[in-house]
Length: 192
Image (cartoon, rainbow, N blue to C red):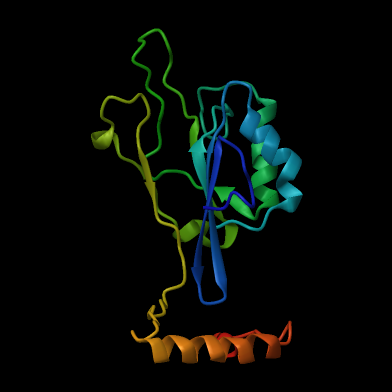
């Protein structure tokens, strides 16, 4: 969880690490005042690139909802933010409204959106899952985020139990840490 990148109650960033690669995923809830979109607009230049951004954006645009006849400023801003983060909107292969209110007087809307890295969006499969809707008024969306296919095995290293092993480890640290030259830790072998 990356509150060091964004510390905002309506934006959640998760980073996955694989070797030297970092995969940043962002979930957004944009309230009626569009606070999350405004925050992203103000901080987009400080953010790394993302592989995925999705959530309930509460914005309307004819590009993703044919029932909308106007262009809302926040929707245009959201598309600009996505482009700055190297993302593009991926349409569900079973498109349609994702917000279906329990209040019959309210129209169904497309306000839940997913964005994937431009280079990967064609391979990202996004779909609505109305059978998993439950009591909520939002149709769940599922997607595939394309990451590297090679997954390195994670091994665990530990100190052997016993006073001698612990002392040897601490002595090794006392000698090794001062010898580290900043900038020379470029590979896993260097770190080891």
